[in-house]
Image (tube, rainbow, N blue to C red; front, top):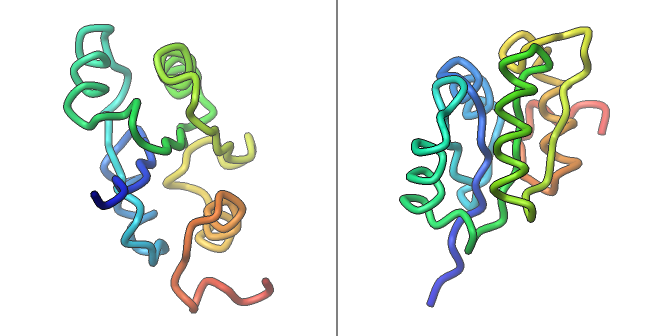
Amino acid sequence: MDELPRVLIVEGKQDRKKIQKILDDEDVFILCTFGTLGIDALEELVDDYQLFERDVYIFTDTDEPGKKLRKMLNQELSHAENIYIDKKYREVEDAPENVLASLLLSANMKVKTEYLKGF
């Protein structure tokens, strides 16, 4: 059986869109929560995407909704790895592409060659 793709959980569509532009890794599925989840929605997400059987990465904003979502996800998915954006950028979608590329690389994800300058 093939290994399930890794899952990168982000909050919004713009986060997913920006990361998709940078990422060059077919082994990573970007899952968008569309903001903070209720407990029922979170449990459904975990079941629907088989998150207990996958490598999971949590990449949320540094604002209160992002912190709340990260906390909920970490409680449910204790095996997940966290990727943190510097507080000065506040939101994943507002971070420079080279910063995002660096963070994704540090999580062992492949990025497109044009974002590898300086690495």
